[in-house]
Each structure stands twice: as structure tokens, then as C-alpha cells.
Image (cartoon, rainbow, N blue to C red):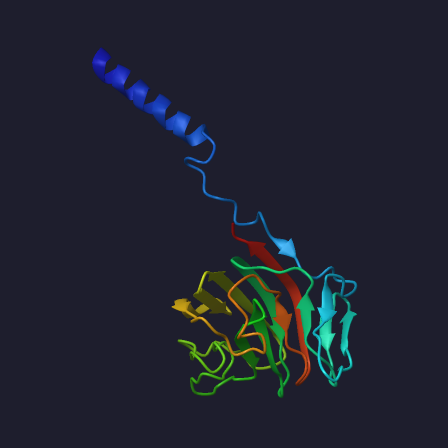
Length: 208
């Protein structure tokens, strides 16, 4: 009886030690490490993408929402990123045609695709490369979410909680204007040279 009690106490002590030891039993906090890319007031941290000839900047902030109205241009982050998690909320119009450019090379298409068949140029596609696994678009007018994980050449994308791409290989080149440059960190780019779109709550978590 004493032996059994002694072993039970040893097991309990070991369990408590593992539970309290930093980094052993505790999972990383999913709320930590995120960097907000919008301050809700102005376009600090962003700049118009260089274009020749220069294009007008139709981006503005209204009640914390970043609204793009044509004629306009793309905007890019002043900071560059390589491996990261990304979260963004978007609101589409009937004619929205935009995109999230990752490392300024690989485009996740943002397009009004509600009720349309799968294709490699619809919303959520890796533009002109890979069609999404499902069409997760909602009717226009409401906010939609995109969650992206990009590590090396592996890309995972969730749209409105549905998985579109699961660690797919994006290949050595993208379809953006910067697709030919060598692999490396690059800015996040929001396409704004086509039609109206709204963004909010964009945040990124670099992976080291």
C-alpha cells in the first residue's frame, strides 16, 4: 500500500513539474506575436506601389475601414516579410477585382465569385495557378475573412473558415510584376488598380 501511494505521489510531482515548466506542456498563445498593419486612422506603414506612369491614390480611411475607390493604385507595406501568418477582412462589391500579393509575388485572388464554378482566377485562387478546393464566397455586402499561412513555398489559405489550399507548393515564381525577382522577403500588396474594395483588421505574424 505504501509503495503504491509513493508511486502515485511521484507521478503527481512529475506531472506538476511538466505542467509548470516553461515551454513543455503549454501550447503557444495564438493571440501573441500578431502585428496590426492598419491603425484605423491613416495609411501609416503603407505606400503606393511605384508605377510608370504614376497612378492616383484612391485609398482612404473611413470609420476604421480602409476603402479603395477607383481610379487608384496598389499599396504595399513599407516592411517586408517572408514566412508568416496573415489575417484580413474584406468587403466586396459586385465588380470587385482585387488581390492579396504575398512577398509581392504570389497573388491570392479577391473577386466576386459567389455561386460560380471553381477556376484558377476566381476568389481564393492562387491566381492563374491553382483553383481553390471550394467556393467559400458569400453574397456581396458582408465582411469576409482570409487566413493565410505562408512558409517557404508552402501556402495554406482559409476563406470564411473553409480551407481552399492546404500547404500547396507555390513554385519558384508568382504571377505578380515582381515574380521574376529572386526568392526572399517582400512586402504585402493590396491590389487597388481595378475596382472598389474595403479592408479592415489586417494583421500579420512573422514566423522565425
